Length: 234
Image (cartoon, rainbow, N blue to C red; front, side, top):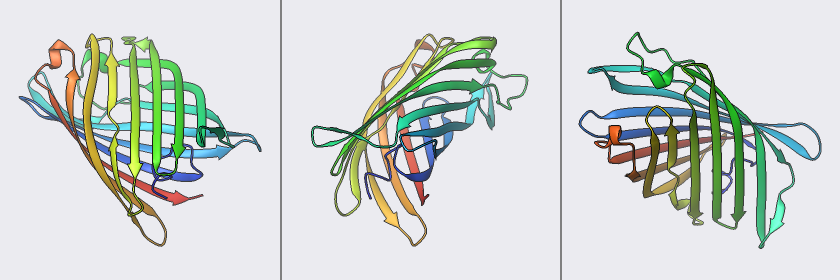
């Protein structure tokens, strides 16, 4: 149960709410809403629909705004039956990815937000007993608006005990051409699973140090991440 709560290719519906607080001279905050919906295409292939909807609170030109950011969507095709590897289950997935210019900023919106992108999504998941490893990479290229290239990379390593308590690291690494560099957080977190009659909840709290960051974001050295997974049976 503990591993399935995190596994993106498990036979369950999930809604992840990930809140990233970046600490600096002017704190910024992003709440990511991430639904994961698998659809079975046939006996061998499934389509995993994954979206990232950011609700951002940040300073732009000296003023604070809270608005919907650009939505990222990927459609990953994966085998329904895992590949046996080293005594565990390995699942690869690949598909197209898009960045939609959905932000609701006012006229002070940043240059990097006015873009439409297309790209690809690559996901690899491995799980054995209470251990789960995941790597997800999505490079995209600007095709509309200001045409700003961007990428996201997320890796996850999690070990869950029988009690439902877990130790993990799951930073979100981001690249934006306009910022001229990657943001690479490094850190650890703890999680706990709670189960009710109709759903499973996993709460995770992590702290990260931005070991690599663009010069323009040099002040933002730390991130505090809070995640809530809501898992529903198919």
